[in-house]
Image 1: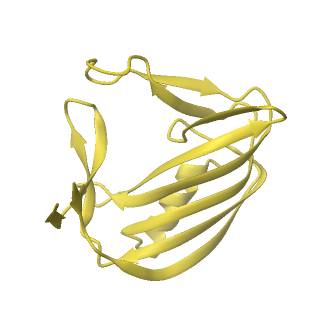
Image 2: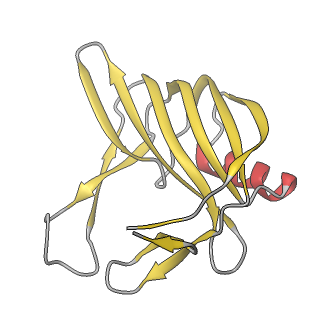
Length: 153
């Protein structure tokens, strides 16, 4: 286990509007406001056609990982949580998972393939000051993984 310590900084209350692509808007906000690290909490709606990464095609021993995608067939209620950290080039990257549900069916996945807002989403962005971490490309997996630059336990 690796970790780094930080403290709560600024808090942004964000309203995304109909058709906004969640990760694109949050990365634009992070760039504009110079947010290097943050925690994210989301609630609202996702529109039909939104895409979620719902897991690797095979659980182990396939590299790079072959992700599976799921397309929402109708509007859904969402709740999500995630983070923002810069990559090795200083670009902010969102990693957020959402549970998207309608009636008795819910699907959960990563939003990086493009989740579009259905009318409204509310997102709270809690900046983390002082944490030393970055998203570094892991060649084997094919993902940019969070790499804390601090202690090892």
